[in-house]
Length: 98
Length: 98
Image: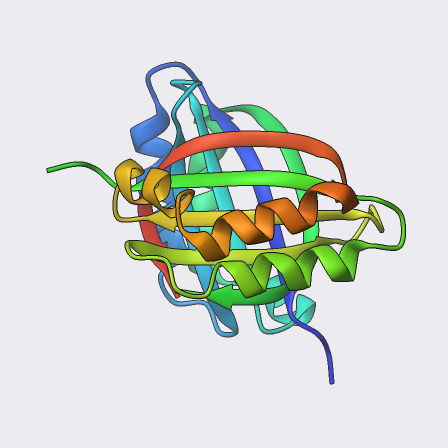
């Protein structure tokens, strides 16, 4: 059985565009088969940064999500307001309460 | 109304002790008032590292959790097998599906 897959990463928006980036991410990620968690959060110490934590039933589910039209549209729309990526890690979720 | 509060951070166990660290974290964090998410995950690229993502109703709930006996016991027990902390960020969760 393929194990659970997770991602955590920081993204930086172009100054003043964080809210727009968040809205795009939320719009594109509402309905993704195999997604167990998609958490978007504002970094409290960097006004342009957000953190995304994702949990997927499998890595394959995550890879398939990148082919979904809504996700591809969100990525394309976000590109002009993305200043860069910070820390990023692939993970195997082992415990999950809440 | 106090806003939601989140934390994301990497911890490194002493080599060979990651599973023990995970078990301690899970044992101590099962029942924490105001906790909406406590996700523990193994870093796939660093055999000693784990990532913890937390979501709390409020920052105050998080601060109070640090006074819970079970959490204090877990912190004390983990100290000898903790090699260090990596990235850490405080966050304001804005979107949360799954």
